[in-house]
Image (cartoon, rainbow, N blue to C red; front, side):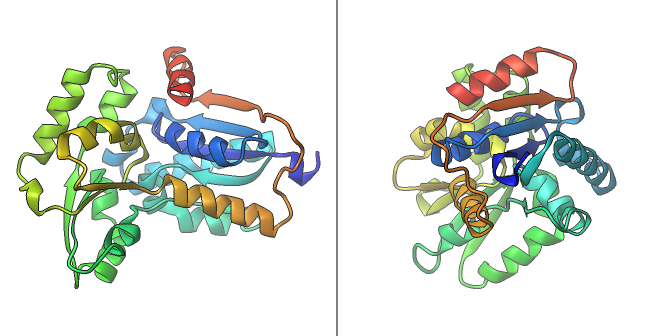
Length: 258
C-alpha cells in the first residue's frame, strides 16, 4: 500500500478521542481512519506513567501493523505521560499529541482568568507545569481535575442531562464565574460537554478545546510530506477497542455520528 493510501491512526484511553476523530473527519473527509479506544484500561488519568506508556506502545505497535501514516494521541493524559517516548521510538512516523489549549485562551487579552478542566494526571505532570510557567505570570490559571466527567462518557450517561448538569455545576461551584474569562477543556472526553457547559456558564465565558488546532496540525504535517489523500472519496473509519464489551463499539459509533 502506498503511504498516501494508509489510514490515520487515532487512539485514546477510551471514547474521548472520538471527539478528535469527528474533527479530523470534518476537515479531512477523504482520509481513512483507524480508531483505538483503550476502554479496558480506562481511565488513564488515575494510572501511573509506566502503565500508560506501556499501553501507548502496545497501541501504536498495533496501529502500525494495520498500516498508518500518522498517529494522533487523542488523549491529553497519554500525551503528558509519554509523547516524547513515542516520538523517539517511532521516529519515522508523525506522532501528534495534545495539550490543554491555554495559548488561545490567554491570547484573547491580558490578565485572563482561566479554568483548565483536565484529568489529575495531566494537571500534575511536568508538561502542563511548563505550559503554566509560560502563561501564569500575566494571567490567573485555575487547575480543575474532573474525573467524573470521564466516567460519564465511558458509562454511556451523556444523555442523562440531569447527571451531566449536576456534575458540571458541582465542579464549578467553588468559582465565581463572573470573574472567569474562559474554560479550557483539557481532556478530549470533555468536548462532549461543550454545549451544556456553555448553557451553564453563559456566553460571556469562552469554552476552548484543542481539537481544531490538533486537526490543523495533522493536515499541515501530511501536506508537507505529500501524504494528504487527494482522491475524492468518503474515507473509511475502523473502530477498535481493547474491551470485549460490544457496547463500547456501539457507543463509539453513536458518539461519532452525534
